[in-house]
Length: 614
Ligand code: X8Z
Ligand code: ZN
Image (cartoon, rainbow, N blue to C red; front, side, top):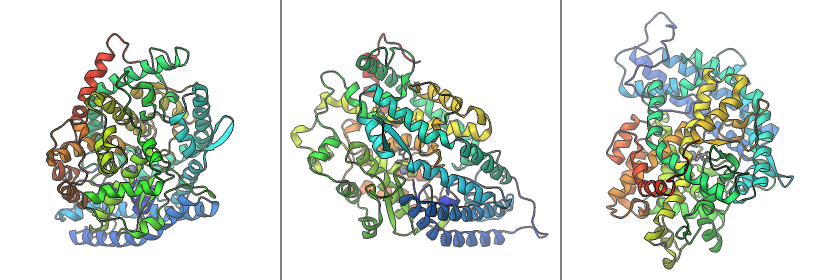
């Protein structure tokens, strides 16, 4: 997340970029006064908005930060109040901006910024008195309940970051089931009423702003009409779906071999708690279960390497910083180290879900994590730092442009960098001995390890917002939240909960971004984009070997070209930013598919004669 999903204008506006080229769905607001609005009025409105949002955002970010790193009733109340002020401000400006729909003669930047003002709210409130506060109270309560959530393991309470790690390492199906069920029952189910109420209020707000519902508003931040965005997402999914199906087939077989028919059948969907992750969103933690016979042992696990070299969380972050420094980015400011939350504080409740923050729109950048010394968190550190370096790169843009080219870009930068964590790179930073570098015979294993995280994620990345789009549009009614969720999990991921669920449950609430109201299509886009960025960087670096062995560590030209894209912020439609770095204007699954092509071939050989699909 950036400027973080829960702060500043992201409190008020998520600052999604919007193109001037397309007609907006928001209707022209009724002319407020007698005189028709002019281009000069529009310029003045934008100037006022940028000033007011910038002033608001500094305190709002600090309040949101204190709340997320020290959850109490008091910080909840302060955050809810500050959030309500931001929402009211965001709605006021969105309505004012809409008055300029159809007004001719506006400059490029003014038109673009008005679009950003109209589309950028994540959770709009209606203008009736009290609504913004009510909405903010509910969303703060949900986010904090998630942060304080506990499951059980062996009958004992266990917090969110510990249970997440335990889901990755346990191979006991009963224990996995207990953790999965207790987490979803304790954290998700109690939020159901709040969530439904929140949907109602935010939809009212979206309608006042001229959108059919909140989902349409979320889909409007991509420099194209919302319907076209939904189609683009489906098209991208179709490009990568065959690869997912091959992986699913293979993994189901391996799980059946390990656990037997009673736990995982040879056909049908996969049991959601067996995949090494609470949400079955990334499966890399069970690589040991699916590793190819003979050559599957990669000879190292990043978590083990870190532990062997006595890395602590701060040292892991320093390693992440080192990568960006090697590309030519300036070191992180001293305040980053003083103010970040890198480990979970022992004495208070916090939101452990990782995020990156830009407090002052200048250089007060921070991460908030409950870092563990393992492979997942090593990658997450690079992910979060990607947000911070992006934020710093665009900090000279006007306030409304201080954002990613679109939110998928923001999510993709750090992941793209982390694709460079190859065995050779690990040697470079002294984590791995040269003699331990796996040979070419291990390429399939390396690709499979990567696919377990990257490919497995794709359907999850898409369905999170398919569910919310359905909920906001009413296609998934309040009484069918659970049913709608289970249906999408089955349709896209081919997974089922370990026990039957009914409408007294609310499993979506067990995933941070639902109570946190962070749109999720961004992560789906990022999973695709990061491979486009990576391919482009490796081409720029003149890499000739197998793509997955490429590391652009230390390459200043790649860094300089990346910086060109980052410093644009949201000032231009995203295809221009994409072109600046990759030379193409299209988002495409091809780079990802090409990266995994040797694996796809291998999987299809393994899968011969085995049932595919569910
Ligand atoms: O939420 C995140 C980041 C913070 S922006 C840690 N991610 C998604 C998730 O955890 O569900 C990164 C990958 C997907
Ligand atoms: Zn992120």
